[in-house]
Amino acid sequence: MKIKITLIIFTLFCIIQAKAQEDPIKRDTLKEITITSNRITLPFSKTSRTITLITNEDIIKSAASNIADLLQNIAGIDIRRRGVDGMQSDLYIRGGNFDQTLVLIDGVKMDDVQTGHHNMNAIISLENIERIEIIKGPAARIYGQNAFTGAINIVTKSVVDNSLKLNAHYGSYENIKTGASISQKFSNGGLLASVGYQESDGYRFNTDFENVSAFFKANIDKFNLLSSFTQRKFGANGFYANPDYKDQYEETQTSLVSLGTKFRTESLIIKPRLYWRRNQDMYLFLRHNPPAYRNLHISNKFGAETNVVLNSDLGKTGVGLDVSRVFLVSNNLGNHNRTAITGFLEHRFEFLDNKLDITPGVAISYYSDFDSKAFPGLDAGYRFSDSFKLYGNIGYTYRVPTFTDLFYVGPTTLGNPDLEPESALSEEIGLKFRKEAFNIDIALFNRKSDDLIDWTKENEADKWETRNFSEVVTQGIETLIQYNFNIGQLNQVLNLGYTFIDDEIKDENIEFTRYSLNSIKHQITSGIDVKYSKTFSQNISYRYVERTDGTSYNVLDAKLLATLKTGLQLSLAANNIFNSEYTETNLVPMPKGNMMLGLVYRVF
Image (cartoon, rainbow, N blue to C red; front, side, top):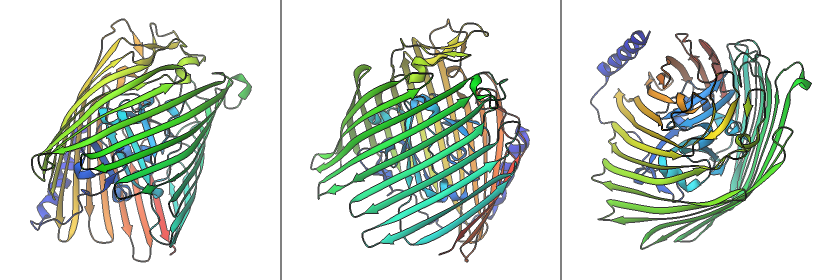
């Protein structure tokens, strides 16, 4: 099967390449997009960090129907899904686990004090996303808690015109998805609002689901308001604990409200913001017998932050402060609260006619239930030419345990209130090569983690219990190659990525771990964007994953897209075309081949 898929991809590439012309390619290489996942905002071309961009154009062409599926095709990203359409998904970056990665929406932190399993709950629909900024390695330290291995910032769309869009999708497993969005532009700002609904019978017993979502964004004068709500109800056949437990069920509700503003002078930018995130999680061990075992957790996070950027003759200075208070009410974990204060300071120096940039910085975090901690770090880069840049990062990252790590009690799992925070020293060195037709990114990384937290047991029949490892060393390489070429006046794109990760656990006395020993060993991601005409285009994506335990799988997805002048857009997406049998987490089998037909209509 591996050979068959490789031959298909190679043949397609050869056919396209044979038709390609030698005309110069005129394509926006994204060099001047301002990266907002930096505390010091910089154009993409000037960053000295490992940052990957997924643009709105990439999203439209992709066969993915949700962010979880979209991120699967990014080198170094491991999305471990349970079910279809990203119903329950965990985000891993460079071998870290779901508690060690941070998700932000327009810069607002979406971490959950109960568990990192909820980090992806509030993910908004693809229709509302302008781009996704993925920052990996020690450069993410400036965000403090949860940005242990990296961070993902989802940048929502701005209002650029007046429009009304309707969408409807239908696919395998009676998967029905509908939605509507409207935007209105004013002389002093604009409004964007959308609603969505999705339901499915599920791809196997007790995997049915029903989702409701709403999104609202307003920019009036200097103020911006962001609000989102997501509700998910789904059968969780084998999703948690032992995969033989087929009658599990879960409901989650996640909401976000953020209000910010911006004060700007010629040399100074100040951006204060207030935010509130709420998450509710109800879990049933037996769906049709709720009293048998039921967990209900409600967490609220209230925060205020201010980010300041000062431009001077000495360079750019970034200063910020984030103060938050979280509350958890739970029938299993108990009632807990935590105050977190994170401050950061960094300054970017530029020398040698701006060819050399050096950015030292430090983040300092205080937690009411743990000690304060400082995370110093350094980013540096040297631009040999407009096309070639060498860069490196080094820094400390840190994570305090979640309340699930500390206090959970269940039939197969037991928390540990004596856990210590985990920390890591990370280094990476990379290069970026940019030409109109050819882009290459290569990064070598090393992470030494101390007191790493994981669920472990000595015997298979024992309960999973949390503990601190003495030391875990993670090393790897990450490569991304993009080639752009023309067929006539139509641009085509070929992407190829490879990731290798090696984990070495120094503590040899552990027989079973839930997360640390099953990270990605080898990962290949590839994609071909073919544009046949101004109306018709196609995307084919392929990924190969081999994990530390030796299991591996291949998955091929494709999408056909037709964009008509009438404002109508038609799509046909096919996932797992060759019916690969594989699991991503907890031995939950992933769906075999499935399809979805989509229609998006712009009324005005």
